[in-house]
Image (cartoon, rainbow over all chains, first blue to last red; front, side, top):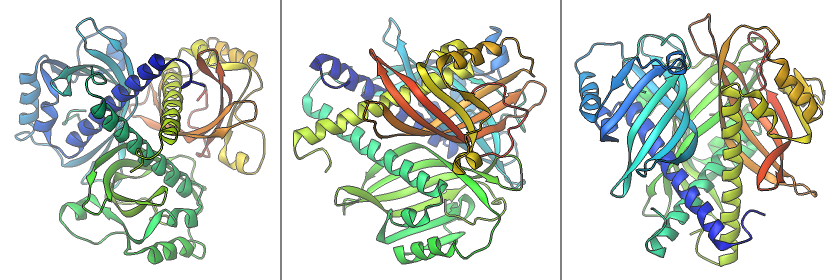
Length: 171
Length: 171
Length: 171
């Protein structure tokens, strides 16, 4: 049985459990911020030097850097969030399902590498049905800042070749 | 690291972990009851005074109370469950994916406020493909009854504007 | 509160938590192996005597054994994995979302019975949008082999009546 045996191994397992839960909780808050279109709250989940990109699996696999959204620091992320208020696009609801969150390891500087699968479901106000808007993987680096986590990097690598009705909002 | 430091803080984290897991487990059982159309089992997951409503995000955001399903107590919920046996509707499979479960806090009476995202995928027997039937959020109040949890309130707020092929079964 | 009371009960809860997490982690690795088309890695997640079948809910409910894929041991599973390299089919991306993982109990021989809901989303390279490819439940038996888990049985029971564009890859 996994829990018998030495106590230290068990402590490490519980520690891993707590860290995983913390990342899940982060992702749940991240999803809620975007789904409720609280974009400033969303931007505040990143570190000042954060890298945020939304890129197709095709480009990512080929090592091509170009993405639909490309932000090299928090200023650009905030800019992206604020631009939403002035841009015109068809009103819509988004709903993020983030699952299979996984801790991959730790960087030399203490950042936590992780990944998670995501599905974004979109409802356009002038169409009746919900549609799969974007499906993919987040490749992340989390950083502990005080008592909470922030994203130092989130690369959103999406599978679908065409993003239905444009990508107006971050994923 | 999160787990070092004082023992009491760590205990609280483990306690939070256990509570979260308990809610997830509840939601998994809830999904299974509905997916296997065990509607009486489903109804038994609510308290006697439970409030259960399925309402559009549009109405919920506007503070409008009207929903597709509206039950003010367990009697109405059971009634809903039993009515299914006499109603006529096209046979179908449903599959619930409930994710991003989150504990939000505790009410003065000890009820646990929580939320979770849900996706219901439907297959109609006379159509080949699976479709997104309903996408939304559960806003919940859980109550501890003996050694298990029951729902004192579940508000299912769905994003999609039209519910494909009618809402015959609870979500 | 759940965590107060006797220590032994609490230990059991933490043990259950760790086991559940271990299964989730397994399923996340399983999803990643398939999504990245590392089919040999996928096959290595099974025991030598593993039973792997992909079967419709209709057939499963009726007690009919025939499925789209039917493997009675790891040799057949590996064969399936390797055959992919020679078969011709339209190129595609798959993305697995595995959720609501649940430990159901323990077999006399120590195997762990479990289940999980799954959604496979497919993108064909010559079509723009992501589609629900398959939706269903995994019914599993996990076996502890050394310090890790392997699948002694995975029955993939899918809801959708027609599998879009053939089932080329395992689920």
